[in-house]
Image (cartoon, protein in one colour):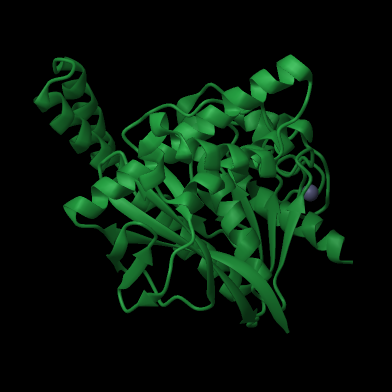
Length: 365
Ligand SMILES: [Zn+2]
C-alpha cells in the first residue's frame, strides 16, 4: 500500500554573513507585509464591511513593491511576501471557522521565520530565492519532492531550514505487540506490562537556565553584555528543547515499530492550555507532542492502530482484573491498592495502563 505524506525535515542552515543579512531582511519584510495586510483587512472590514481576499492582497503587495516609499520591499523574496498573505488568509479562515482567535500582529523579535519555495538541492547546498546557494547540514536523506521550505532564525541566532517534503511512501509493517500507555507526572509513562519510561534528567540544564536567567535580569538594558547573556540563555533553552524532542522522537518511533495496537488517553488540549501550573503545562505540552508524533508515525504503518480512550474514562479507578470501580482511588496519593471485589493487588499506573489498553481494544471489536 502507498500513501502520500507530508514530512518536515529540519536542518541547520549555515549562511555566510551576507546571506544571513538577506535572510533577516526577508524575515522582516514578510512580517511587515503580514502586519500591513492585517491592518488593511481590519480597516476595510470596518469601513465598507468588505472582505479582502488572497488575490486582492497579492495585488496590494505588487503595488507596495512599486511604491518608492516602500522601495526596500522590492529587494525581498516575492514568494515569501505572498506566503505572508496566504498565512493571513488562513488565519482569517480559521477565525471564521471558530478554530482560532482573531489574527494578531506579529511582534518584531530576535527570532522569526518565513516560508518560500527553494530551488534545486545539490549535495549539502540549497538554492534559496534572493539569497543564493546556502550550505546546510542534512539531518537525514531527503526522500520525495520538496513542496516548500521555512527558513527561521532562532533566539540564539542560529539559522534553520525546514523542508516540507511530499512522499508517496510504501508503508512498512509493525511487529505484533499491543501496548496501553498511561502518561503521568511522576514518570513519563507506564505501560500495561509495568515498564516505566522517564524523561531524560534535565535538572542540570534547568539550574544553568535559571542562573542564566537571573544574570540576564541584572544586566543593563541595551548593553552589549546583556545581548551576550541573552544569547547564552537562548542556547540553553534550545538545548533543552533538542534533548526533549530527540527523546520523544526515538520513543515514538520505537513504539510504532514494535506494536500493532497502541492505546493512549485522549488529551484535552484546550483545557490544558488554561492550566496555570507551569511545570504541569510543560509536561502536558510534551504529551501532546508525543501523541502527535505517535499519530503521524502510526499512519506510515500498514498495521498499526493508535487508539484514543475517552478522557472521561476512569482508567485509574477500575480494577483491571474484574472491572470493579473503586472511587477511593481518585486520590492521587494512593499509589497501590487492593481490589475489594476480587482481591487483586494493583500498582496505580500499571493498572491504569491495562485499563486503557482494554478500553482501546473495544474500539477494534
Ligand atoms: Zn477486582
